[in-house]
Image (cartoon, rainbow, N blue to C red; front, top):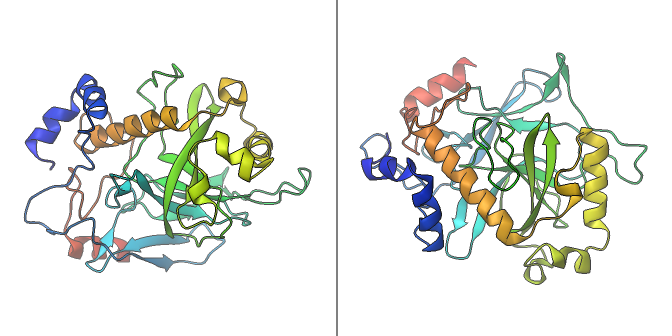
Length: 303
């Protein structure tokens, strides 16, 4: 369980906003108990595949040098807090079609292919030339949650109930399950059955153009037409209307969204928000679902 002072801190959104202004925002909520006393900043992470890709049985798990971890709970949101560099977990590499996502309900939150009406979901857009498949690396931020029971103060809408989505607009094609260090540039919003579904725009810090990209307005200068193509892609692939009339939100707005999404994950982790069925099993973060590495190994091997 999280330290008492963090639980107290997380019960007040007023404190959260004040802490952000004073740059006292906690970087993560990790326990100091004796179960798996591991520093989350020094993890070497690999992926372990189980099942056959392209089937409903396929799962990709995440494992550190110490044992299995949850990508949602055990990987830090910040790769470098001072420089505001974030960890992005790649779910769908650029140019691929299979819609993959971190499973919120499965123990240890593995990656798996999404389904609809019992069928695997893939994205094909031959009518939206030249875009076939995902046009950027697509993934999620760990330690975040867009609560479906909490209202976003900017949009006035509840969240979509998932991790915060992110796209990396850099040139390199990443690997599924890879963890990229990215800097955030801005965001767009989609309307999902009356809920807000943010898509964070980011760039891999190792991209040749990363140093020139510092806010959403810089993207058009260095990637002409990319944001227009992005809006078009989401319009056709998701069939969801754009929020804010398709307006691109800047980095300052996006930083607030990320802060609140992280805080909602923290509140979920310590039982201060209703849990809609999300697995809290973890081996490092120390929330109410913390288990030993041995138990995590047995849990994964049973699946």
